[in-house]
Image (cartoon, rainbow, N blue to C red; front, side, top):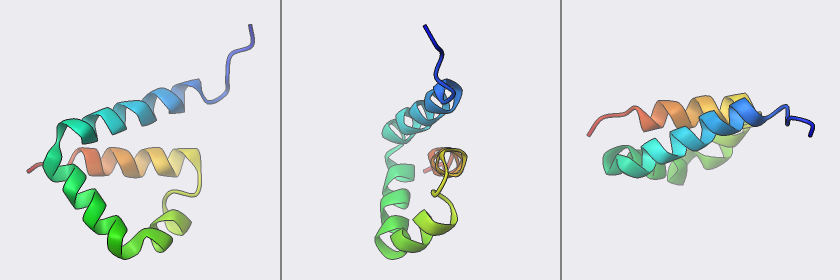
Length: 64
């Protein structure tokens, strides 16, 4: 079986999403930010797998 080149980044992305789900304050902050800056966020930060994962990780680490 051929291993996916995205295996590691997929694991990191899933981890960040789980952390967001466990931190309502961070999730609310993320939602609020996206509501006002979604187009810019996608173009500037979330336009690559690494960029998306880094951004989700940053938001998931925001404390209440």
